[in-house]
Amino acid sequence: MTRVGAAVVDITPPPGGAMAGFAARQDAARGGHDALSARALVVDDTAFVSVDVIGIDAVFSARIRRLCPLPDGNVTIAATHTHGGPVSMPGRLSVAADPAYLQALERGVLLAIEQAAGAREPARLYAGCGAEPGFATNRRHADGPVDRGVPVMRFDRMDGSTIAHLVSYACHPVVLGADNLLWTGDYPHFARRALEEACPGSVAVFATGCAGDVNTGHSAAASLSAGYQADRTYARAMTIGEGVAQSALAAEMVAVSGPIGCAEAFADLRFESRESGTADELARAWRAASRSPGDIHHIWADWAGRQMGRDLEPMQARCTALSWGGVLILSLPGEIFARTALELRQSLGRDGPDHVIAYADDNPGYIPPLGEYAVGGYEVDEAHRFYGMGASIAPGVAEALSSAAQRAAEIAAKPAAADCTIKKSPT
Image (cartoon, rainbow, N blue to C red):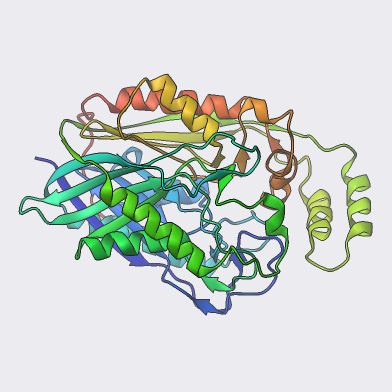
């Protein structure tokens, strides 16, 4: 009998902290609109954890997995990628992270896993895929690819009441713009709230799919302004979140059963410089173009002097697969594009309600598929400067990660390894 537990831990920072996600936003958070959270879903001795931050880095993920009460290879930690959260990755996104908050974040994620593991009880598993609610748009190409639909799993107690939902949707949680100065989970908050209201006493876990090039209809350039934008409001975020939740709740669900498996596989993150000019030349040009401290050209000039062309050694990237009753939850690091998810689904040859998740266990920035390098643009040529990486992710990395995720999926679909046992919590 499969045993399932879920838990929610508040990770909201106090007012006054630096916010992550928009270079145009210079002011600190004034308070909170809704609570940020770490949400853990533990199925037997495997776990998926969703965290309301823009990203976590590989060091943070590895430390959490080492300290938590589950085998570290069995745990996936994914950021929702809300742009209404705090700075959560040291050395990235052009703003210093608060060490005290990073410690609090670590405690919160660990506590969520521990509480969910301690709450496990016999459960029945159900899965389905809700209809595409129509909010996701490819922001780089008119009629470009989107990983459509709302995959959903429901975990019920033996008495029929609901323990938890796992819902994913491939759309950037960036409805709120740079003018927002309140902590918020963005539209995933409203999706979770609607799911929990529909099933009182349950926990809703939201995971963001491969949305590197997908949002609710605005261009990447629109986020370079801190001015008010009429289509980027809390009312709009609520409409989208509740629409995603209704799609999940309306999905035709079927009972699933079978082994609970997990696997991880690795690929190298490689880098390639696409800048035209030396660091000194570019820094001078961007300083001359800057009109105010903290504007885009000021950030780029600082990056050129501090980071351009440095630390370009390949980084190991982790991809994971959880197989819960035959349903796959595949997770990749960074800002993965929709095409990569679609090609991964095709390579697996599966028609079921599998989840393909991004922003998991690390977030080094955008990881475009091969065809996007000739197009260029923000995600390919510029975003690495905001992320604090020395150069763009190299062509071919997205395809290597997809292959790693496929390898993990093939292993996870087999019965769990004999050494998958529960660790004792650290004292």
